[in-house]
Amino acid sequence: MSFEHLLSPIRIGPRTIRNRMLITGHMPGLDEHGAPGPREIAYQRERAFGGAGLQITGATPVHASSLNEEAASHFNVDDRIIPAYRNLADAVHAEGGTILAQLAHYGGAMVSHEAGRPIWAPSSASLCTTPWPSSSAFASSCASISSWTPCSAGPW
Ligand SMILES: Cc1cc2nc3c(=O)[nH]c(=O)nc-3n(C[C@H](O)[C@H](O)[C@H](O)COP(=O)(O)O)c2cc1C
Image (cartoon, rainbow, N blue to C red):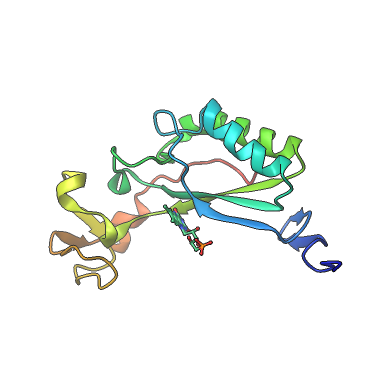
């Protein structure tokens, strides 16, 4: 079997991925203080060394209203995370791989008693995808969303 398509490169936006083998998003629980540290970088580097074309981090919050201090994650709430991301990307690139940060906001999937604060979500309607009532969620207005300050990290 030649796996002609699986092993051939594919272009995604500005990047050429060396093959179509994808490691789907997950957080290995190795972050350090909300950023990729040496253990997580070694974990991802091994996967690139093994030949993966593209690997994806777990969902990482883009705003303080989506932080859950107890969950292993990357905190993309300001530019302090950029050096750690650069180290992560450099390690994966050194093995010929590509890595993508999965940016996310948990919205109504946050649990208010865990978050310890009101939930920000597109609507206060209950989420049918989680077992938790989201009655504490309030609908974020366009104005409140536009006040979010995005992290200024460029494509990597
Ligand atoms: C513990 C765990 C954490 C996961 N975290 C994420 C995540 O953060 N983002 C995401 O897009 N998918 C996440 N997933 C889904 C996986 O990336 C994958 O799509 C899913 O497990 C189906 O693939 P599988 O049948 O090979 O397990 C997670 C899955 C598991 C089991």
